[in-house]
Amino acid sequence: MPDDSVSIPRYLNQDEAPVTTPKPRMEIDPPTAVTRSEASWPGLAAEVVHVTASGPFKCGFLASCHLLMSVNRGRLVHGEARVQDAIVSTRRDIGRTLTFIPRGYEFRGSFMPLSLPWGGNLYIDPAMSLAAPELRFDDIEFEPRLFFDEPVLWTTASKILRLVEEGDDNRLYAETLTAALAIELVRLRSRGGLRPLADRGGLAEWQRRAVIDFINDNLDRNISLKELASLVRLSPNHLCKAFARAMGMPPHQYHRRQRIERAKLLLADTHRSITDIVAATGYTASSNFATAFRQVTGLSPREFRRTLL
Image (tube, rainbow, N blue to C red; front, side, top):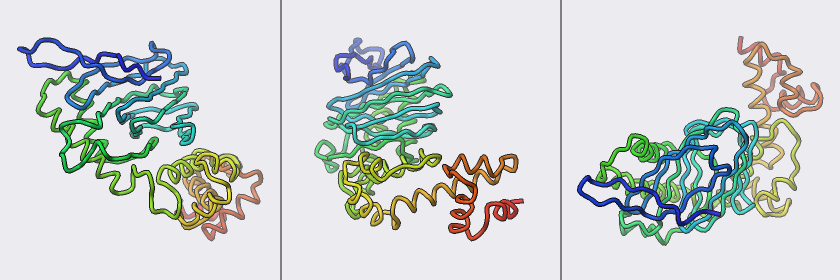
């Protein structure tokens, strides 16, 4: 899927001869849907990507390097991102998120933008010489993760992408940021963010995140345990038990809790009717919604709204 032969220009000192360094690259279809500006340094290639077309587009990536995607802004009418046909996200508000695709993993996405996304891609060589030797960066196995928030990693990625946008040829600064990027990825993994296995009662971090994201993206409809289990390659029974150990409650209770949390936010808007909120949170009848709301909050929806006034 990727084009490993694409040459990415490298910023140079004026006394250096022009060179190009072959680097893998995210495929985007149609190519005319985006504009791209690029740069590379030892162990890292970076590009800033602006989506300029309002129609649907697809993207894909599979390579021997790691990919860190940073989305500064982006809202979708609809979309789906997949890794290995197992990790799935249908999140629609993807602004200020990061996505990490380790080497050897296949990423595919199809999106219909509501507002035009822009951000950047960092292509990270696992064997980068700038990483501190004690990190053993090339030996680490990372897990993929879609559309997550990590402020320190976000800041480092943003500084690198700003160099590309501004055409800054400060090589020392760029290489310092590259070394810091490797440290932050290892640090995030050490906290469980990118580990292949997490000590969460049988759920890996990517599995936990995939299920949570799917639930939160589908609060307005009824979802089945079979749907959730298929996302993370587990049997429904195994998923139910593993999710309960990881989250302290079974999936259906988490789903209900998140629905009520969304309802609380919607009730703060006094222009929205209770009927609208019932539909937006996936309930088929106002009585069912009111019962669930009272069970979680101890108040009826109308009583809760009055506390906000």
